[in-house]
Structures are given as structure tokens and as C-alpha cells.
Length: 381
Ligand SMILES: NC(=O)c1ccc[n+]([C@@H]2O[C@H](COP(=O)([O-])OP(=O)(O)OC[C@H]3O[C@@H](n4cnc5c(N)ncnc54)[C@H](O)[C@@H]3O)[C@@H](O)[C@H]2O)c1
Image 1 (tube, protein in one colour):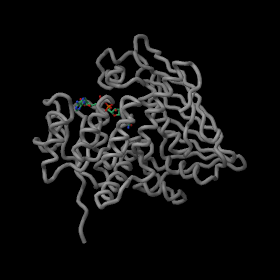
Image 2 (spheres, rainbow, N blue to C red):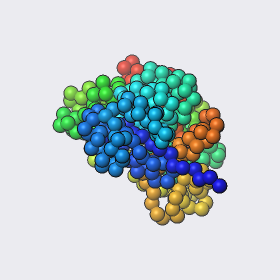
Image 3 (cartoon, rainbow, N blue to C red):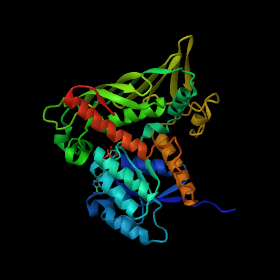
Image 4 (cartoon, helix red, strand yellow):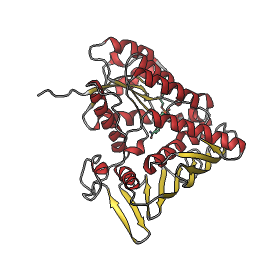
């Protein structure tokens, strides 16, 4: 019997002091399907080498830039099997295109690109290349999100009528981009971030979660975007009303100036018969409320959960899994899809794993929200 080898991963981004690159490393390696072997970690060759050293990878595979990495890797017999993109947003498209040009599948962090036009270009390139493309909307990896999704799809809640999704953070309440804070500096710069500030950074997560769990597309939005902090060039606060394809409506709120909030992402979906309520800071619990029955609390990994939720847990209930494990679920699904693709399967990504379609939807959402705010009225998708 042959044993499937580990897939080899390269990374772009994730240099010294980066937030999400090291998280990708931990998540990718968690389930034993992937090994992290190469990267172009920074725009500085020296810092890229330093990062390679701290990640304990072969110094010859800590490249000065991503073009060099793709060029060198494509010639190696043990070349990387895919690349993860963990850079500021303006590089998502060029790195993805360079990777696909080299014949290498892509796992990208969100948002898919910096602008909607870029997302359409990326969509074409993905289709033409035939290469797998995954998008790390992390929250899609939580077991209780999968349970909520399955409940909505089952019809037990009845027709969905109302949604409420909020993503509140407080870390940009002060103008910390002016202090050189690494994560804030590029997020507050339209050239590096794209035109949607808070709406792009965390509003897209809220939007994705809403469509992912509810299973119904948003068709219209009336959004008000503001820059609360004086001198900030991009929005840091957003309040929106949304319309869904089935006639349901709801609210979407995203803010990075909600002082005191950390990473407060919460989704509520109300059907005719009942509702689901999930909160990212208490991710192993799902509250299900019924019109004609008592409130229920579902616990992660419990035997009574549906197959989708049980498929993604690793330890028995009462042993909390969290952010890195949810991220790792997406990597596990991506790795399995890559194996299937290498065996000849076209379109191998499972429906549970966000891909290019989710990427384009997210970028459309940002573009529509900005337009709605500009015209101070409803816009269609
Ligand atoms: N899925 C999630 O939950 C999640 C969470 C945080 C961030 N993100 C996304 O991840 C991306 C990175 O965010 P972050 O907070 O880690 O930013 P960060 O500033 O902490 O890290 C970005 C890294 O990219 C590197 N970089 C910049 N230009 C480069 C180049 N030309 N070549 C190689 N590396 C380069 C920087 O040196 C830095 O190490 C963003 O797109 C963000 O939206 C996603």
C-alpha cells in the first residue's frame, strides 16, 4: 500500500512581526498532511532570510522575493505543491498570478484581491489555469459554524426571515497607524489595502459568514461607511442593512473603533421556527432557540451534532478547539482537495471550503458597500 507523502507548502508574507503568516504555518501543519518548506517572507531579502531561519526551513529556500521563489521552486524535484499568500492585500493578485503562471495552486488569505476589478481578473486566471484556489475565511472552519450551516440547510429553522451579523474590534480606536504599528500601517493605506478599510478587513468575514451559514445570497445593501478617527483615509466603521435573495433582510455591522471589543464576531439567523446564534469568542457553543420549544445549547464535538460538524473536530467535547484549529480545518480540506486534483479530479474543492467564488463575492460586497455609502442609498449586487 502506498503512503501519500506530505504536501509541500511555500509562503509569501509572514515575515518578522507578521500576524497571520505564523498562524498559517501552525494551521497547515496541524493535521500532518502538509510540511512548510519555503517562502518569500518579506519585501526585504534580509528579513526574508531571518524569517526562514526562525521557521527552521532550509536557508536555500528562504527567497529574496516571490518571483525568485517561483522560478527556483519550479525547477526542483521536490518543488512546493502550493503557495499560501499572507501579504497585505495589494499583493494578493500579483502573487496568485505568478504562482498560477508557475503551475502552482494557491491558498490565499482574504480579501481575495485589493479591488473588485482585480477579483474578476483573478477569477478568469483561476478558471483558465484549472488550478485549485482556496481562500482562508477562517470562521468557515469552526465545527459549530458547520452545524449552524447544516441546520439552516435542513429547513428545521423554517424559511429564513432575518439575519444579524456583527464584527466588532476596538484596536484601531486611536490612530495607531501613525505610530508605525505594522498591521495598522498598511491597513490604513489605500494603496496597500484597497479602497475598503474596515469593510474589507473584517466586513468581508462577516459577509462571508452570513452567506456561508445562511446559504442565501445577499442581493442588495444600504451601507454607511465612516472614518471615525481624524485623518484616517479609509473607513473604520460600517453600519449596513442587507436584502437577501429569498426576501429576508438584516443588518451587518463592522467596526474597528468599538473601544474595548477584541474580536467580537457574532452571527444570528432567524427562521420562521427558530434561530441560531454563534459567537467567535465562545466558538465551541451554538445557541439554538425555538419559537415553540426551549432554548438549546449545542456543544462542539458532542455526539448529537450532524455529520458536517463532527467531521471537523479532533478531540472529545469539553476539550476546546479554537482559531488555529478552525484555520487547520480549511488546510485539511485544501490538502485533501489537492490530492484529489493530482489524481485527476477537476474542481476538487468541497463546498465547505471557500474558493474563488467566495473571493469574488467578498470583493463585490466591498465595492457595493462603498458605492452605497457614496450615493447614500440602496444598491443592488
Ligand atoms: N483569515 C484571517 O482571519 C486573517 C487575519 C489577519 C489577517 N488576514 C489577512 O492576511 C493578510 C496579512 O495580514 P497580517 O495582519 O498578517 O499583516 P502583517 O503586516 O502582519 O504581515 C504581512 C507580511 O507580508 C510581508 N510582505 C509585504 N510585502 C511583501 C512582499 N513583497 N513579499 C513578501 N512578503 C511581503 C510583510 O513583510 C509582513 O511580514 C492580509 O491580507 C489580511 O487581510 C487574515
